[in-house]
Image (cartoon, rainbow over all chains, first blue to last red; front, side, top):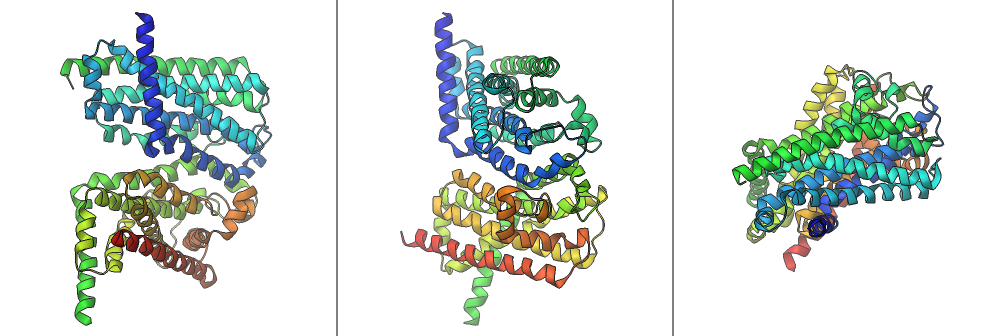
Length: 260
Length: 259
């Protein structure tokens, strides 16, 4: 029974990944836009490393990699939500609901797909970073830790996209949340050290869970791994995951109760 | 001859009015074009605000440095949206009806892209309101008019770019290419920092990117005074980009007509 459910989740995840790679609208926010912004921000604001209080880094690209990965992952979660909403609009989810498939597997399949995209995003930006001269202080072990944290982040935030898609059933509503992703990113230490961000964004960034996640991912790239940064990142990921799971479960119950 | 010209102008006006109607009937469609540059403006100024401490910056506030870039980014998004709308019209067959109309091709293209220059004023004015609220210095009427004129010009450039891609690919799936193209054009300039502070490939790209002259011409009043030597390269760059992209879009329009 468990094996059958896992096959369903794997099939839905594979469909979700294929869907993303076949539609430029879904792939562009995950790969193209974060890569463009990474390249431009790294060269445009690269002299920021000369600012007093900027942490010691090999280069600004090393510092920015974690931000690009998290940006890509959040956009992947949003894209996953859009794709799920399109499935709801087109009736594909209705067909799944009448199939002998556990309800949770439908959401789990989508989240597994988002996780795969998170892994892809981490590998993509690590490759791009290494190609353009970034250093990973913790080496291969650090790179694996980065991939693991980005993948977990994708699952945690993917649940929020799925919950909104299930609750609204509208792709345009989920797509409308696209700018919100950037609000969350700018109010975190994704692109700059929190202590150098201007107020009031600085105060928000210092308590934003995304800052803890980004700093946990950044840690093995720019320095040796610290237990504090790691546990804070994991705690933040668990917190977001718990919230998104609760929201998804509620949204799924709502959809089943109302029949879409 | 005069009658024909008047009819062509009438067709251009009708297409501009259609785009304006769309804005009135679906006001929500304008929100992303306003929201995205506003979020980027507020976010980037908060995040990179301390860059002005680096030697070489000519302004004390990063908001004043960034506001023209955000206005031009808004123009880029608006222009790209014109391309997406054209792709939708091609997909739905409405554009075929336009092609069957007794209107010259250039007038069709002019009508479609002209609306973008007017629509670009919406994000620009919202951004100016936000920027003045955040303490951006008043640039003076002349500098403001110059900045808005350049924003309208860049919206035309973006609309021609979007129209060219829409006519080439004939699908809304080309939307990311339309948006990414304008994003790259505007951001690979002195968008984040003065030329001397840019590093690596971006220094090279910004040196030769014609959009840099537009950004710097629009920025003049916000960081200092307007000079003719700082203005004419921007005007020339917009005219050049309009000429090149206009010719390329016309080529695609002729191709779609005779296939």
